Length: 212
Ligand code: DX5
Ligand code: ZN
Image 1: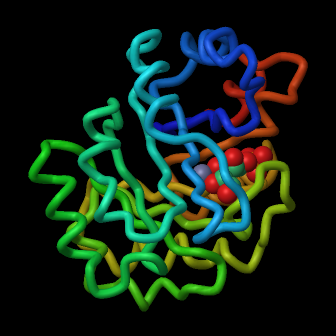
Image 2 (image 1 turned 180 degrees about the vertical axis):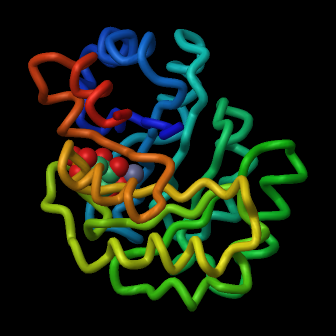
């Protein structure tokens, strides 16, 4: 089964509840992109928004932190309602195992993400500590960018490097019917999609296409 996680970065922020309700019947997860203007050149949503939307949906909150010093904010994101916290290896470095432990101690799922220029081998020692590995297939920061095909090889590399049968390998950035299929064939079992879902005329159909 492929876990589809619609990215609300492509939703209408003036009517977030409506846009969450549009995907809710068809998916188990919601992808929430948090950007700090330092780790990435954009600022998006943060803790108060997550706390508010926690009240209107039971979807599993797949929280993607594109921030520096993630360890400083883990507890606040969990208190706000995050179910899974994915942080970036490039922001965490040697603190990576400590942060995974910090997330797991609170009973939540831990994800580790790598940007396009980071190789799969660099996180080799941490893969088995994680519930999820997120391979970015665009430079993080903005929705609606073009899928970087050369990042897709990392999917099979991560799969090979892991001993975990239940590891979730997620891809994020430029996912549509074609790139989603390619990633699934390489071993991805979770697809994040922003524009492909939210800018489509038939949201249900777009989601069903990604699942297939
Ligand atoms: C980009 C974000 C993505 C983004 C994906 O930095 O991490 O989650 O919303 O958007 P699309 O699917 O439009 O590329
Ligand atoms: Zn994301």
